[in-house]
Length: 549
Image (cartoon, rainbow, N blue to C red; front, side, top):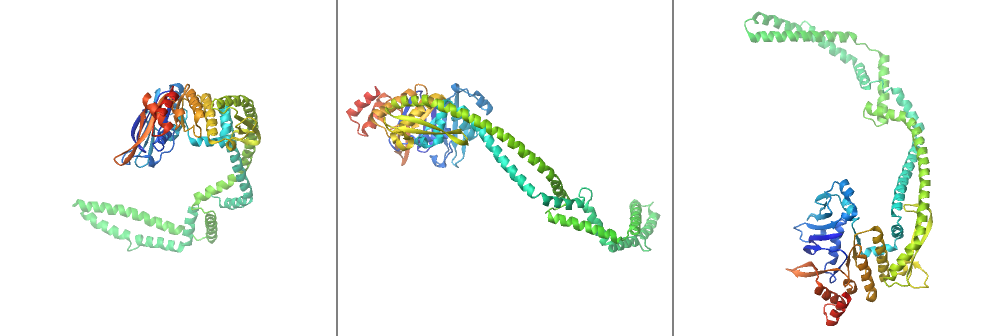
């Protein structure tokens, strides 16, 4: 249960810390006083997305923090799995910066919002006015049946298998599309493969072939270059002869000066290198031959290669080789793909048969549970002064499978004896819908062993003796769990074991909300105000005392 709620700089609240008790707590206050602020603050703890507009003073951040007793929930494994410190009293906190950024903490450890939701959803439930509208939703109705029948776990297991099956079907469709596209391209791919096979990309280096062709096409220029090189080195006036003369001149004086000796050595070394170059040039010149047939062959190879590069949008031989290998494996992959399709079809057929079996069992369990649930609801509704009201659970079987099985549930409502039941959202008034939801929530809370539930005006549309019955129901729920309810009805407010009042004041030109815990006299006065308005008379005070006795 919630032990305390601390709010800082949130909407109209500067700072407040509320200590909650077990049992039934009521929250009252004039319209616009800020009761919904408490609801919105608690919603942040449940993982709702933060809004920049909730920050009060924009110079500071907003903080919402709750202390929740978790010792009854066996959550040690959850804390361990998420690397969180475990304490019997857990501190959950949200912070919203003045830049609008939100952070969540569990026991002072930063956590993802999803982790916060996973924890809080097991501890606290908020029933807002919007939730009453959910009663119109058929999936919500079926979910109610599953909770009350104890089939929630089986439905979850079915949903897991069904979602796996759906993923498998999508995968199968993609594989079939891929196989169809691949088959239609098979002939064209074979043609392209034959073209690339002729290039022998794995055996021929086309960079080298291109180099050979370039050399062959420029043989005259190359021969001239080697000839000029040979003559420049070995000719009568070539570099070698000149250096030899310089060498002889330096040799005469190499023994008398170290610098001359060093230059002599360098020239001698250069002569060795230049002589070697001259020899290589002569050898190259003698080796060069022009073979027209060879030139034609090289030209054809390079042209075919360049054409393939352009055709297949490849930048180099490596990319073209990758594409060639891809084509070679395509025929093999087609066979493998066909086998994969066949195996997946067999798997999905077996999975679908399993789903049908599970769905039939689930539908049967749901059907068997309905009479007992209808009787429980009838008793709960009678306690809320819906004496002759009847809720009828009409369960039908679908032709196919959906995420929840093969069942369709619609709840029908009959307000009075002898009246033919019609869909609940079409027949029930606002006050009747509120009581129907309260009856459902009372049963659901007991079934799920929820420890804290927060009602936002669950008593909408009721008054008088009916309001007293609503208050009594909330009080009874509070015997087994913590119930917190925002109310405008004195009959409900009088039943609370704890009474909080929200009020607002204008301080220095700014409206601020405050939360106070009322003592017995203050509770009587506030209950009287709910009955008579701002002008509280003696009769209202006496009636308030009577309600609270």
